[in-house]
Length: 132
Image (cartoon, rainbow, N blue to C red; front, side):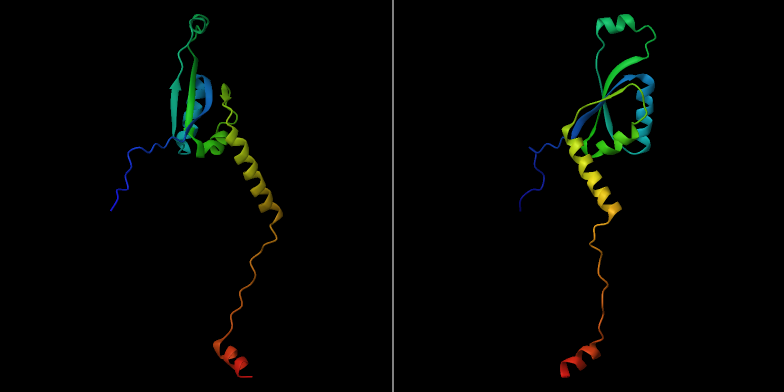
């Protein structure tokens, strides 16, 4: 019997979702992701000397939210309306949105493939037909 566990497999479905530039935006996005059960990882970028020099309030940050690529559409909907976010360009998103829109259009218009009614025959009736 062979082992199910294979040591050389790597599953990395984590992709960069967006960059956040303020602490308030980061807090809002974190709260929404936690409320809707989207796992994320925050990757912090160091500020350059010029950024540190001109940022007197200390409220500006630079971090990247990384999420599972299966949660992109849900995360995009949740993050709408939050200022200070710049989305990363993921080519896969456009294809999934297009597919989703097509499926929604089909649901609205109807597919024309309704299930036919099931007809049940009595066994006695089918035997009578065979005898005739």
